[in-house]
Length: 243
Image 1 (cartoon, rainbow, N blue to C red):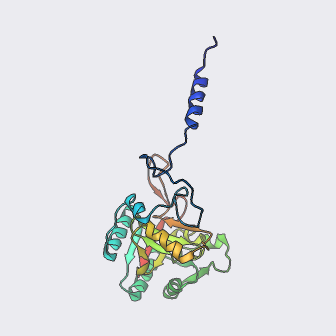
Image 2 (cartoon, rainbow, N blue to C red):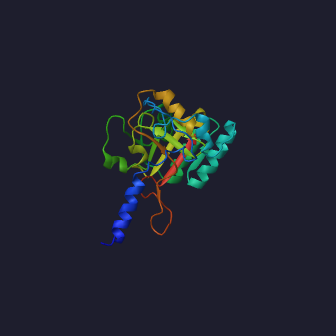
Protein backbone atom coordinates (compact mmCIF):
# COMPACT_ATOMS: atom_id res chain seq x y z
CA UNK A 1 0.00 0.00 0.00
CA UNK A 2 1.29 3.51 -0.76
CA UNK A 3 2.38 5.45 2.30
CA UNK A 4 0.92 8.86 3.12
CA UNK A 5 3.50 11.63 3.21
CA UNK A 6 3.65 14.24 5.99
CA UNK A 7 2.62 16.89 3.49
CA UNK A 8 -0.51 14.98 2.49
CA UNK A 9 -1.39 14.38 6.14
CA UNK A 10 -1.13 18.09 6.94
CA UNK A 11 -3.15 19.15 3.88
CA UNK A 12 -5.82 16.59 4.71
CA UNK A 13 -6.11 17.98 8.25
CA UNK A 14 -6.39 21.52 6.87
CA UNK A 15 -9.17 20.49 4.48
CA UNK A 16 -11.11 18.87 7.32
CA UNK A 17 -10.70 21.98 9.48
CA UNK A 18 -11.86 24.31 6.70
CA UNK A 19 -15.04 22.28 6.30
CA UNK A 20 -16.17 23.33 9.80
CA UNK A 21 -17.61 26.90 9.89
CA UNK A 22 -15.89 29.16 12.41
CA UNK A 23 -18.13 30.78 15.07
CA UNK A 24 -18.90 34.43 14.57
CA UNK A 25 -17.67 36.96 17.17
CA UNK A 26 -19.96 36.93 20.18
CA UNK A 27 -21.07 33.31 19.63
CA UNK A 28 -18.06 31.39 20.96
CA UNK A 29 -19.90 30.35 24.11
CA UNK A 30 -22.56 28.41 22.24
CA UNK A 31 -25.08 31.24 21.83
CA UNK A 32 -27.58 30.68 19.08
CA UNK A 33 -27.11 32.73 15.95
CA UNK A 34 -29.96 34.66 14.37
CA UNK A 35 -31.85 32.77 11.71
CA UNK A 36 -31.50 35.56 9.17
CA UNK A 37 -28.82 38.14 8.61
CA UNK A 38 -30.19 41.69 9.02
CA UNK A 39 -29.90 43.90 5.96
CA UNK A 40 -27.10 46.47 6.06
CA UNK A 41 -28.55 49.81 7.16
CA UNK A 42 -25.37 51.87 7.44
CA UNK A 43 -24.97 51.13 11.14
CA UNK A 44 -21.83 50.11 12.97
CA UNK A 45 -21.90 46.35 13.47
CA UNK A 46 -19.65 43.32 13.74
CA UNK A 47 -19.92 41.00 10.73
CA UNK A 48 -23.53 42.06 10.21
CA UNK A 49 -24.51 41.27 13.81
CA UNK A 50 -25.65 44.55 15.29
CA UNK A 51 -24.92 44.41 19.03
CA UNK A 52 -26.85 46.31 21.66
CA UNK A 53 -24.99 49.35 22.97
CA UNK A 54 -25.01 47.96 26.50
CA UNK A 55 -23.47 44.72 25.26
CA UNK A 56 -20.76 46.57 23.34
CA UNK A 57 -19.78 48.43 26.48
CA UNK A 58 -19.23 45.18 28.40
CA UNK A 59 -16.41 44.34 25.97
CA UNK A 60 -14.61 47.66 26.50
CA UNK A 61 -12.77 49.27 29.44
CA UNK A 62 -15.18 51.06 31.81
CA UNK A 63 -15.40 54.83 32.02
CA UNK A 64 -16.78 57.19 34.64
CA UNK A 65 -20.24 58.70 34.76
CA UNK A 66 -19.32 62.40 34.81
CA UNK A 67 -17.62 64.76 32.37
CA UNK A 68 -14.82 65.35 34.90
CA UNK A 69 -14.19 61.59 35.05
CA UNK A 70 -14.00 61.46 31.26
CA UNK A 71 -11.54 64.37 31.20
CA UNK A 72 -9.35 62.66 33.82
CA UNK A 73 -9.40 59.43 31.83
CA UNK A 74 -8.53 61.22 28.59
CA UNK A 75 -5.65 62.93 30.40
CA UNK A 76 -4.38 59.60 31.80
CA UNK A 77 -4.58 57.91 28.40
CA UNK A 78 -2.86 60.90 26.78
CA UNK A 79 0.04 60.52 29.18
CA UNK A 80 0.45 56.86 28.25
CA UNK A 81 0.12 57.62 24.54
CA UNK A 82 2.53 60.59 24.66
CA UNK A 83 -0.23 62.96 23.58
CA UNK A 84 -0.09 66.47 24.99
CA UNK A 85 -3.52 67.19 26.53
CA UNK A 86 -4.34 70.80 27.44
CA UNK A 87 -7.68 71.66 29.05
CA UNK A 88 -8.38 75.39 28.71
CA UNK A 89 -10.76 77.29 30.96
CA UNK A 90 -11.89 79.61 28.13
CA UNK A 91 -10.86 81.01 24.75
CA UNK A 92 -8.49 83.47 26.40
CA UNK A 93 -6.50 80.58 27.85
CA UNK A 94 -6.70 78.79 24.51
CA UNK A 95 -5.01 81.76 22.87
CA UNK A 96 -2.34 81.81 25.59
CA UNK A 97 -1.63 78.10 25.12
CA UNK A 98 -1.39 78.49 21.33
CA UNK A 99 1.09 81.33 21.71
CA UNK A 100 3.11 79.19 24.15
CA UNK A 101 3.20 76.31 21.68
CA UNK A 102 4.34 78.68 18.93
CA UNK A 103 7.20 79.97 21.08
CA UNK A 104 8.30 76.60 22.48
CA UNK A 105 8.28 74.85 19.12
CA UNK A 106 9.56 77.72 16.99
CA UNK A 107 6.66 77.67 14.55
CA UNK A 108 6.93 79.95 11.53
CA UNK A 109 4.36 78.42 9.18
CA UNK A 110 1.19 76.43 9.92
CA UNK A 111 -1.20 74.40 7.82
CA UNK A 112 -4.89 74.47 8.64
CA UNK A 113 -8.43 74.39 7.29
CA UNK A 114 -11.18 76.94 7.68
CA UNK A 115 -13.32 76.59 10.77
CA UNK A 116 -14.39 78.51 13.85
CA UNK A 117 -11.58 77.25 16.08
CA UNK A 118 -8.90 77.03 13.39
CA UNK A 119 -9.64 80.59 12.26
CA UNK A 120 -9.24 81.68 15.89
CA UNK A 121 -5.89 79.88 15.99
CA UNK A 122 -4.69 81.54 12.79
CA UNK A 123 -5.63 84.98 14.11
CA UNK A 124 -3.96 84.29 17.45
CA UNK A 125 -0.69 82.91 16.07
CA UNK A 126 -0.17 85.54 13.39
CA UNK A 127 2.05 83.24 11.29
CA UNK A 128 2.22 82.39 7.61
CA UNK A 129 -0.88 80.26 7.01
CA UNK A 130 -1.30 77.48 4.49
CA UNK A 131 -4.97 76.59 3.96
CA UNK A 132 -5.85 73.25 2.36
CA UNK A 133 -9.53 73.92 1.64
CA UNK A 134 -8.98 75.08 -1.93
CA UNK A 135 -6.29 72.58 -2.93
CA UNK A 136 -2.71 72.35 -1.80
CA UNK A 137 0.84 71.53 -2.77
CA UNK A 138 2.03 68.58 -0.67
CA UNK A 139 5.63 69.83 -0.78
CA UNK A 140 4.56 73.17 0.66
CA UNK A 141 2.46 71.50 3.33
CA UNK A 142 5.42 69.39 4.40
CA UNK A 143 7.26 72.63 5.12
CA UNK A 144 4.64 73.65 7.70
CA UNK A 145 5.72 73.30 11.31
CA UNK A 146 2.27 72.19 12.44
CA UNK A 147 -1.10 71.13 11.09
CA UNK A 148 -4.02 72.57 13.07
CA UNK A 149 -7.43 70.93 12.78
CA UNK A 150 -10.79 70.57 14.44
CA UNK A 151 -12.41 67.16 14.98
CA UNK A 152 -15.72 65.36 15.42
CA UNK A 153 -15.11 64.12 18.97
CA UNK A 154 -12.63 63.10 21.65
CA UNK A 155 -12.98 59.59 23.11
CA UNK A 156 -12.00 59.34 26.78
CA UNK A 157 -11.98 55.53 26.83
CA UNK A 158 -9.06 55.27 24.40
CA UNK A 159 -7.59 58.80 24.44
CA UNK A 160 -8.45 59.07 20.74
CA UNK A 161 -9.38 61.92 18.44
CA UNK A 162 -12.27 61.05 16.12
CA UNK A 163 -11.91 62.98 12.88
CA UNK A 164 -13.31 62.93 9.37
CA UNK A 165 -12.39 64.70 6.17
CA UNK A 166 -15.31 67.07 6.82
CA UNK A 167 -14.25 68.06 10.32
CA UNK A 168 -10.47 68.08 9.87
CA UNK A 169 -9.92 69.45 6.38
CA UNK A 170 -9.13 66.07 4.82
CA UNK A 171 -6.35 63.75 5.94
CA UNK A 172 -3.21 65.67 5.02
CA UNK A 173 -3.11 68.04 8.00
CA UNK A 174 -2.97 65.10 10.38
CA UNK A 175 -0.25 63.30 8.41
CA UNK A 176 2.25 65.57 6.65
CA UNK A 177 3.25 68.29 9.19
CA UNK A 178 5.46 66.99 12.03
CA UNK A 179 3.14 68.36 14.74
CA UNK A 180 -0.63 67.79 14.69
CA UNK A 181 -2.65 70.16 16.86
CA UNK A 182 -6.33 69.41 17.47
CA UNK A 183 -8.70 72.00 18.92
CA UNK A 184 -12.00 70.75 20.35
CA UNK A 185 -14.91 72.01 22.40
CA UNK A 186 -15.67 70.53 25.83
CA UNK A 187 -18.98 69.16 24.64
CA UNK A 188 -17.10 67.06 22.07
CA UNK A 189 -15.53 64.89 24.79
CA UNK A 190 -17.38 61.56 24.81
CA UNK A 191 -17.08 58.66 27.26
CA UNK A 192 -16.49 55.67 24.99
CA UNK A 193 -16.40 54.18 21.50
CA UNK A 194 -20.12 53.27 21.35
CA UNK A 195 -20.94 56.91 22.09
CA UNK A 196 -18.60 57.96 19.27
CA UNK A 197 -20.28 55.59 16.82
CA UNK A 198 -23.71 56.84 17.90
CA UNK A 199 -22.56 60.41 17.30
CA UNK A 200 -21.39 59.55 13.79
CA UNK A 201 -24.70 57.88 12.97
CA UNK A 202 -26.67 60.83 14.33
CA UNK A 203 -24.46 63.45 12.69
CA UNK A 204 -24.03 61.96 9.22
CA UNK A 205 -26.88 59.46 8.85
CA UNK A 206 -26.67 57.87 5.40
CA UNK A 207 -24.10 60.37 4.15
CA UNK A 208 -20.89 59.23 5.83
CA UNK A 209 -17.70 61.14 4.99
CA UNK A 210 -15.21 59.41 2.72
CA UNK A 211 -12.64 59.39 5.53
CA UNK A 212 -13.19 58.60 9.19
CA UNK A 213 -10.50 57.64 11.66
CA UNK A 214 -9.46 57.45 15.29
CA UNK A 215 -6.13 59.14 15.98
CA UNK A 216 -4.65 57.58 19.11
CA UNK A 217 -1.39 59.30 19.96
CA UNK A 218 1.34 60.49 17.60
CA UNK A 219 2.68 58.24 14.84
CA UNK A 220 4.78 55.43 16.27
CA UNK A 221 6.46 52.13 15.52
CA UNK A 222 8.21 49.48 17.58
CA UNK A 223 9.24 47.21 14.72
CA UNK A 224 12.98 47.36 15.39
CA UNK A 225 13.94 45.51 18.58
CA UNK A 226 10.61 46.62 20.12
CA UNK A 227 12.03 50.11 20.69
CA UNK A 228 9.31 52.78 20.47
CA UNK A 229 10.05 55.42 17.84
CA UNK A 230 7.72 58.40 17.38
CA UNK A 231 7.09 60.10 14.06
CA UNK A 232 7.94 57.11 11.87
CA UNK A 233 4.90 57.31 9.59
CA UNK A 234 3.36 60.69 10.44
CA UNK A 235 3.44 63.48 13.03
CA UNK A 236 5.93 63.07 15.83
CA UNK A 237 3.81 65.21 18.14
CA UNK A 238 0.08 65.30 18.87
CA UNK A 239 -1.39 68.10 20.97
CA UNK A 240 -5.07 68.23 21.92
CA UNK A 241 -6.46 71.55 23.12
CA UNK A 242 -9.95 71.43 24.67
CA UNK A 243 -11.81 74.64 25.44
